[in-house]
Amino acid sequence: MTEFRINRRTYLKAASAGLAGTVAAVAFAGTARASSKATKAQAGYVDHPGTGGAQCSTCANYIPTGSKCMQVQGVVSPHGFCNYYAPKG
Image (cartoon, rainbow, N blue to C red; front, side):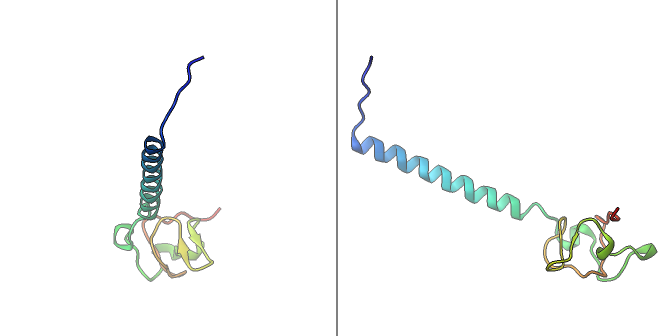
């Protein structure tokens, strides 16, 4: 069996590089997740109901706790409307 020897300096360099790579990957993943929602302008969001009474409170993407949306960034009005409207049901 072959014995593999590594000195402390080489080990610490490799461990530091691995840690830096992990931190960078986690930071990048957090950024990608945060920007995956559309801005209000991109979604065509307005603070009043759409045609036929369509509004955020009746949308499948609306999260009542905190008045949030799964598709749009930030707080939205329960009486608002956007292009991502999907009726509950």
